[in-house]
Length: 88
Image (cartoon, rainbow, N blue to C red; front, top):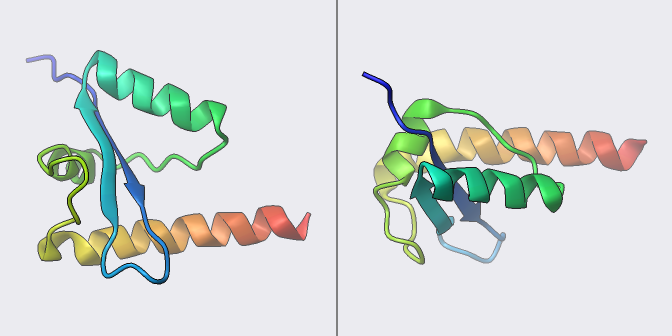
Protein backbone atom coordinates (compact mmCIF):
# COMPACT_ATOMS: atom_id res chain seq x y z
CA UNK A 1 0.00 0.00 0.00
CA UNK A 2 1.31 3.43 -0.97
CA UNK A 3 1.46 5.62 2.14
CA UNK A 4 0.92 9.35 1.84
CA UNK A 5 3.59 11.76 3.00
CA UNK A 6 3.13 13.30 6.45
CA UNK A 7 4.79 16.40 7.86
CA UNK A 8 4.64 18.52 10.99
CA UNK A 9 6.19 21.81 12.01
CA UNK A 10 7.21 22.61 15.56
CA UNK A 11 7.96 25.78 17.46
CA UNK A 12 10.10 25.80 20.57
CA UNK A 13 11.61 28.63 22.56
CA UNK A 14 13.52 28.32 25.82
CA UNK A 15 10.71 29.95 27.82
CA UNK A 16 8.17 27.37 26.60
CA UNK A 17 7.18 24.36 28.66
CA UNK A 18 7.12 22.10 25.58
CA UNK A 19 7.31 22.44 21.80
CA UNK A 20 4.07 23.32 20.02
CA UNK A 21 2.83 21.85 16.77
CA UNK A 22 2.39 24.82 14.42
CA UNK A 23 1.40 22.84 11.32
CA UNK A 24 0.63 19.23 10.49
CA UNK A 25 -0.72 17.52 7.45
CA UNK A 26 -0.81 14.65 5.00
CA UNK A 27 -0.29 14.57 1.23
CA UNK A 28 -0.52 17.98 -0.44
CA UNK A 29 -0.56 19.77 2.91
CA UNK A 30 2.61 17.92 3.95
CA UNK A 31 4.21 19.01 0.68
CA UNK A 32 3.26 22.64 1.42
CA UNK A 33 4.71 22.44 4.95
CA UNK A 34 8.01 21.15 3.56
CA UNK A 35 8.00 23.71 0.73
CA UNK A 36 7.44 26.57 3.21
CA UNK A 37 10.26 25.31 5.43
CA UNK A 38 12.62 25.14 2.45
CA UNK A 39 11.66 28.67 1.35
CA UNK A 40 12.30 29.95 4.87
CA UNK A 41 15.57 28.00 5.15
CA UNK A 42 14.27 26.10 8.17
CA UNK A 43 16.09 22.81 8.75
CA UNK A 44 14.06 19.75 7.85
CA UNK A 45 14.46 16.48 9.71
CA UNK A 46 13.07 13.39 7.99
CA UNK A 47 11.71 10.93 10.55
CA UNK A 48 8.70 8.94 9.37
CA UNK A 49 7.72 7.57 12.77
CA UNK A 50 7.89 10.97 14.45
CA UNK A 51 5.96 12.61 11.60
CA UNK A 52 3.29 9.90 11.94
CA UNK A 53 2.88 10.67 15.65
CA UNK A 54 3.07 14.46 15.34
CA UNK A 55 0.48 14.53 12.58
CA UNK A 56 -2.04 13.29 15.16
CA UNK A 57 -1.42 16.27 17.46
CA UNK A 58 -3.78 19.22 17.00
CA UNK A 59 -2.17 22.38 15.63
CA UNK A 60 -1.54 24.76 18.52
CA UNK A 61 -1.17 21.98 21.08
CA UNK A 62 2.01 21.08 22.92
CA UNK A 63 3.59 17.78 21.98
CA UNK A 64 2.61 14.88 24.25
CA UNK A 65 5.02 13.87 26.99
CA UNK A 66 5.70 10.55 25.21
CA UNK A 67 7.37 12.46 22.35
CA UNK A 68 9.63 14.69 24.50
CA UNK A 69 12.73 12.55 24.05
CA UNK A 70 12.38 12.11 20.28
CA UNK A 71 11.67 15.82 19.76
CA UNK A 72 14.57 16.75 22.08
CA UNK A 73 16.90 14.86 19.72
CA UNK A 74 15.50 16.80 16.76
CA UNK A 75 15.91 20.13 18.57
CA UNK A 76 19.50 19.24 19.52
CA UNK A 77 20.25 18.31 15.90
CA UNK A 78 18.80 21.57 14.58
CA UNK A 79 20.68 23.56 17.23
CA UNK A 80 23.93 21.91 16.13
CA UNK A 81 23.19 22.78 12.49
CA UNK A 82 22.49 26.39 13.45
CA UNK A 83 25.81 26.61 15.32
CA UNK A 84 27.70 25.23 12.32
CA UNK A 85 26.04 27.75 10.01
CA UNK A 86 26.83 30.62 12.42
CA UNK A 87 30.50 29.58 12.48
CA UNK A 88 30.83 30.04 8.72
